[in-house]
Length: 95
Ligand SMILES: [Zn+2]
Image (cartoon, rainbow, N blue to C red):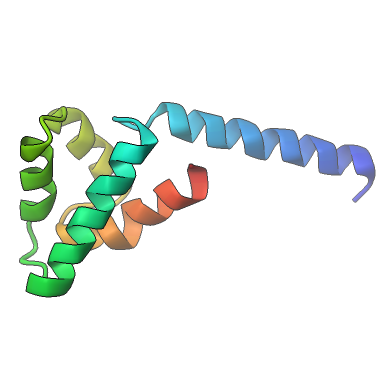
């Protein structure tokens, strides 16, 4: 791979990241705090295959539920532990 290929790849990666970021339903620090809250509760109480901790965080913080849930579904987060396993990864890679 020559230098210009590398540059093109770098630009492409940056664009992909920007694109992913612009699709975040709420600002990055809020996403992070959602993931952390869900993580702590799943560790304590386990996942019951619903988004109970995710939705209770959304309600508590008065965030747009439909947008956040749609984003989570797009990234494989259909229950609290999947939010941690799938959506958190996507967030981590693109923030
Ligand atoms: Zn689960």
